[in-house]
Length: 393
Image (cartoon, rainbow, N blue to C red; front, side, top):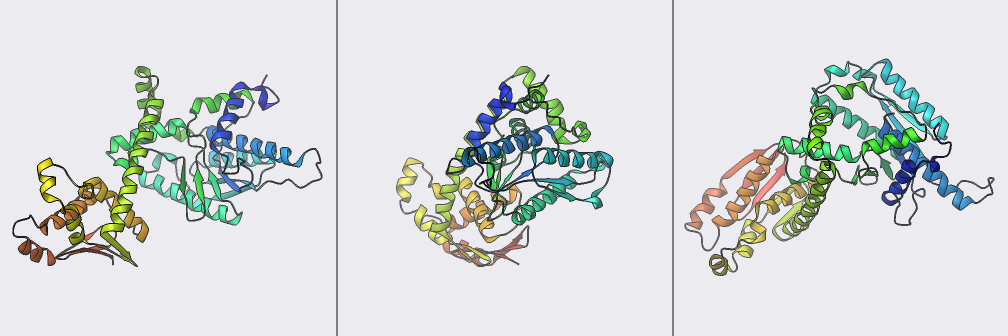
């Protein structure tokens, strides 16, 4: 018989200890910041709701003491459920389950129904899944704003991290994708998305729920392996684990190292933007002449040592370009790695064409002055003698 007190469960207690390490804010408490929890009814999100609800209640008792008449000094904890209507009665049963869970825990619930999307799960295409994620994202932002929530908590697990990184690797993604899922990211300027279970294995969450007698819902569409993500989850990762039992932990380590490398490159890219370019309204100007002067100031030494200036390294220029896109609010969805690499090569080549050591530099600069083109997302490119100018049309 399952324990009546969650603290009697060693597995559940270890989960409580784990989330205390990942959730507290700078004041050391969790419940003083209003939070929205996304809950589908699946095991991972049900575990997150239970864990945060217990933490909120525990911190409330610690502050209020034994005087139950005093108001509970905690910020709101709200649950959000998005019913896409993709599985008919099953989707409605998921919603009813989450409703009952919130009633049990005395938590407010906000439901968003997307009836116009009601179709068989077997007909969903990859582009539709991206659309559904965007629908949930917009729903979370609206609901968080309505309830004054600073944080949105979602229940990505260690297994989700490994599956995501394998998927990105198979697709040939760049360094950002190989870093995997971040523990926190911005939903907008005021709302932070947090993933406090990213270090916890999926089976640990299920084991903890079983020990405290908490049921959950299973989505049958997760078994449809014609979806790449489900195929990785159901076939690929278990096969790899049969030979390498610690593969999930190994993938996590690789992701951590990649994120550290990405952060270093981002800092250098930030310096690159400040030194060699200007962001002005809806325009990005890259001063290739300024870049040339800087990188060729000690040209003879660079030749003798066969060294390369950091500012001309392609990863730095690509990262700087992506930062410029983000700061100007330009859409990056249609820009492939090939586009970023071609742009970086153009910037580098244009700076070299006006190098004091380059042959026929004046003629190359004159030719470049008439060059222009377009990039995805409605971005025009004009290459001039001493600069590149990119504008959103």
